[in-house]
Length: 259
Image (cartoon, rainbow, N blue to C red):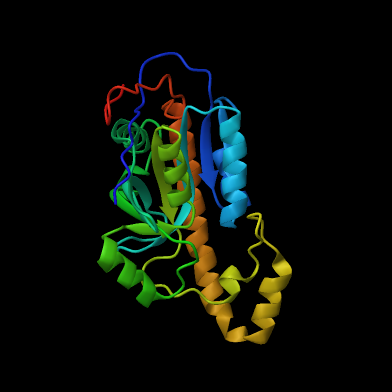
């Protein structure tokens, strides 16, 4: 069942920060930007920890919530480093629409060559999917793409979107593809992910010792991750230059409309 976003980015003055939601520590470092904007970044790999951090940030006040970070590719034509500006998220509880005007502002910033030279050709608009556990195999990715039409998948956007809807806040998604749809992840790829979103090297090395044949797939994934990281840095710089994370107000009387 769709969740409608009632508020939208408006024109009144607001000193509240935008909350940026992501899953991993390296994504959070990128999301913080250069400190020139009022953003509060929350992250965790485990859903309950992420929800707790997000609720604590909301208690301090927020102008909107944006899901930012990496994602797994679902559409077969998307290469590593593609950037998704989502119109909606298909999650475990149904479809959650993003704020139309905010999504348009994000898309305009990341496709403006004055703000992000070379990024425009990697940007796609469309739906995201969100799941509670990592999507590992190419077969599972194909099935989710066929059932939802989503371009990519992550594990945080449904939490960010549902929380934004529950609190009457604008919601947006900006995600870079790491592993493409045709890539099955080796077990070592997720072995080192801690609940708090940081990465432990030891479990990855133990997994490689257990099955050394994973090394080639892990190196390919590392190259994918570099492409996604480059895109995220470029996108975050563009969002800063475009002032996209400075929400000036919320218009509660005009669903889907904003400044």
